[in-house]
Length: 321
Ligand code: SAH
Image 1: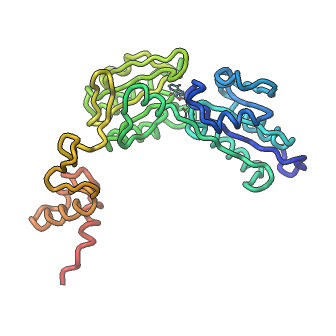
Image 2: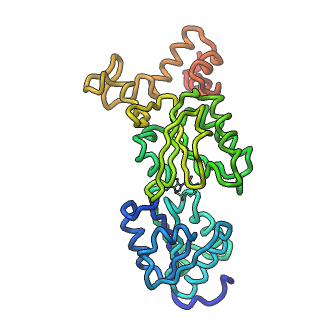
Image 3: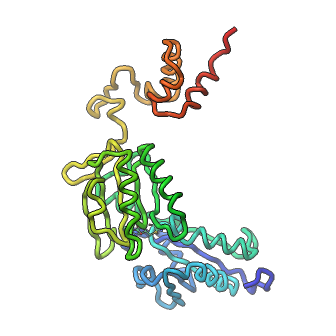
């Protein structure tokens, strides 16, 4: 491939996330984009999931380690004036081919607006699909971490696990285990247990919206004993997540403001306004504590915040004259 070769006719690369698997969870645009494509490129398993949509198209199946080949192949076809679709399950921008494709294209001299259009079609990613099957575990702040150390050093993964657990995010673990990578989930469990109760609810969801779909409800203490494989996503609750009647739910926070989900606000709270410990209320609280003689370090520890956050509030105080 050479960026200076003449381009015959403007082709296009479409990077398509087709959702968790079942066709009814594919977006209209994903379906239309596959229909538009002359060439469809993807892992054999992905190709199989959309095979009904591929009549009359050139189909290129690739193995697990041929990702960069797939980007080059899409670029080659687009340069020949074809519409080349690269397909992925879930969202192609989430641990998918969108990033590597742009990287390869940019390195080859492609630029936006230079003739070959690139479109990314978003899809429902595994964490949304898996969450939907077990209740509403992602209703508050969450983060996703991939346990794959094929391209990411373990200390980076361990640091992110530790930070996310400390900050009380709900966690979605992608790529938790494979035939060869079996120790990562055990290490992850150990790190998370440093910050979170062993009773924390965990949902282990395999092959969401596919034929072999299987759901195991577990706890942080026991999750590593579950059957976990390449097509599993592990959802780990935060400190307020609960399981009731088989549903894993993370509260949105209504209990911080309202009495029993009614219209009546708790004492000191107002509908439509920040909480009494929202930004302004919290700063007022810090000022109050300082006025009472509490030290900045003590206040930082109380709120489990860096000292710099308390110092910032102090910095906003009018300077003593
Ligand atoms: N682009 C994909 C993620 C690719 S990484 C997406 O947005 O969903 C591959 C990992 O995704 C798997 O190891 C697994 O953790 C998760 N995954 C993908 N499809 C899944 C499904 N149908 N059910 C459960 N987990 C899935």
